[in-house]
Every structure is written in structure tokens, then in C-alpha cells.
Length: 235
Image (cartoon, rainbow, N blue to C red; front, top):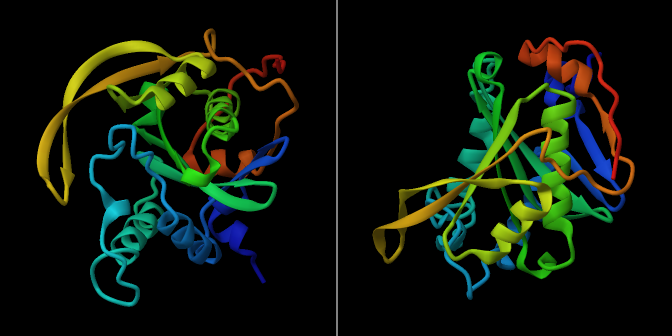
């Protein structure tokens, strides 16, 4: 009998370094993920980080609307819409085995652009211990080393100094500001977003060994062909 990893190759992916591990979100992760969100993921002293305050919707388990139903629809949609032309890896982040956050990788027309966008969040109880930096390093390093990305882009709401600090540590540089729209329970309003970009030349790698599994089958699934291998070092 075929395994789930053979049927859907993204499930075979594993990227790990030290205590932190990234794997594509599975249904078995969802109960733990829901509890993590319920415990809080937003720092009240910082700007709301998302376009939609999905994490603040009323908890309404088993109901057709509210959290977690609306979020489940989003997470499941990442699999249903997965194509070589546009894909999103919703990576569950574990530290010492416990689910602590999510790290996304998103690309559109990757074969022509070589550009990957990143987005992430952590449970509030797990802020401030270096996990945010390491999980971003793992995602960006994977995009460069295993997928052949030419650049990784991200952004944060101006005033979110925690996200800005992570971006600097990973090697991102400012890439212009633009106006975005946030939708919250208090209404719709515009905020300034700082765009940032990192390239293989500016990327700051983790100081310890990174382990990657399942990249070969994922590349085939995405229709990505690698060029000649280039030596890589950590540090």
C-alpha cells in the first residue's frame, strides 16, 4: 500500500536544526494548533501582524463559522490548490517536540521568478527565545539550497520591532514600503507595511547543522529542476 508521503510528497518534507523542526501541517496537528492559537499569538504591545484578525475570531468549535472552522478552511485549501504554478507550504514548527507556531512558504510562477514569500507566527508563550529567527533561517535556507530560489521576500507592519529584528538577523534588507488594508472586528483600516528581501549573498545561516529530508520528491512534485550542486556551509 502507498504511504501518505508517496501520495502527497509535501508530507515527506522535514527541515530541522537543533531543537526546531519544520514539517508540512497534517490533520493530526490541528488539535494542538487550535489550542496554541487559543493561548494567544499576538503581542498586545505590537501592531496586529495579519491582514485579517483570524486569530481573534470568536471560538466556536463545531460551528460553521468562527474559529477554528474558518482557519481550517484556509489550512486545508493550501493542499487543495497546490500546483507547480502556485504553491504554499504551511509548515508546522515544533521545538523540542511541542507545536509552537507556523512558517509559510509561498510562490507563484516560481519557475520564472525564482521568488519565494515567507510568513510566520509563534504562540505568545514561545516568543523571545530565538525560535522565530531559527524557523525563518530554516525556511529561507531550504528555499535557496533545495529549491534554487533567487530571493525570499517578506514584510511586517511598521512598528512591529520584533519581526523587524528577526528579519535583520536572517539577512533581510529593506525593500520599500506600501500601504495595505487590515480587516479586524473593529473595522477596516490602512497601515504601512515594510517590505524586506533576502538573497543567497546576504542570508545569515544557522550556526549548527541543518538536516533536510524529502526535498527530492518535493522538487519532482513542484516540477523544479536543480542545477549543478554548489558547496554550502553553516555559520
